[in-house]
Image (cartoon, rainbow, N blue to C red; front, top):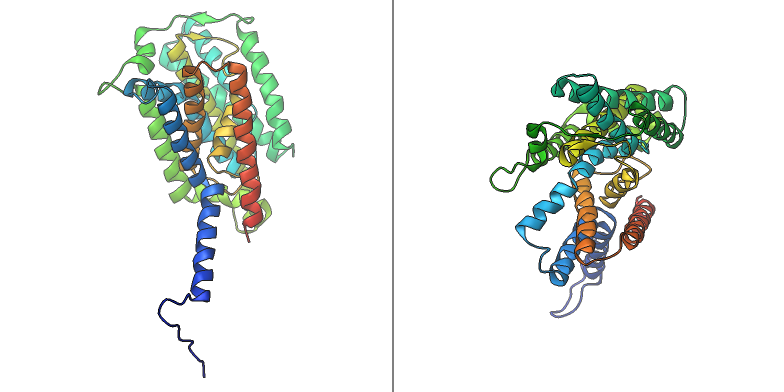
Length: 339
């Protein structure tokens, strides 16, 4: 027969106090190590830059931040899927550059209609992703090596197409995709980015193939034994990332009204940083599209705010590197706390 211990009014219940402490500890761990911590960091950055620069928190500048991260945001959707499988894609910047050069050469030199040139760029991006996926799944190359090789090949092809020369001048309607404002604020490219994130979120949450991505990241062998076609899903994830990299090249060409072989240089770091800052694990199986949105915005807010304050671009690189290190340490802490 169990006995109940009576507590006098005002007396602390040790069991209740311990449970409350445990709940607070778990809550703080989730905030510090998940996408909740990234959201808190984004809010802090916005508040700090708003105080330091009166120009920062204005509608015009906020839209400017969104415009600046539109290309990064597109690439980060594909990178999220790749990292969820436990892989990594170092070739996104080079594939972006290759895509924008294919767009320029086919439309200016080959005389193709621009819509067909855009389609050709997307196909080339998908083929680059296909080579990445096949190299990883069938040739058994580590994702780091396979995509590093594509990074070099893609950049070389981008320069080879025009012997390193840029292509300038696109139709006005093409440039309007990034510059024309609707409802006074939003461009077509921003609307496309928003739709991509909505589609990515829906796919990962509600589609069986999306859930398979998480399963592969959690353990490819276990996923295979569960009936998931691991190689097929992995290849399609890299194809998806390649197509989105080329789409990012199209958007960048629209913004700059030109195609340059060096477009996309350095995007690899920012893309991986955005996904990891958003709470994704580099070991795979953990991450969300919503977290990636926050990570992309943190990168954009950091760069924009530091620019407004006149901070050197070299110091900005140091700051971004430190943020990446903190995000990876948070990932390590999260995995240690996982049962």
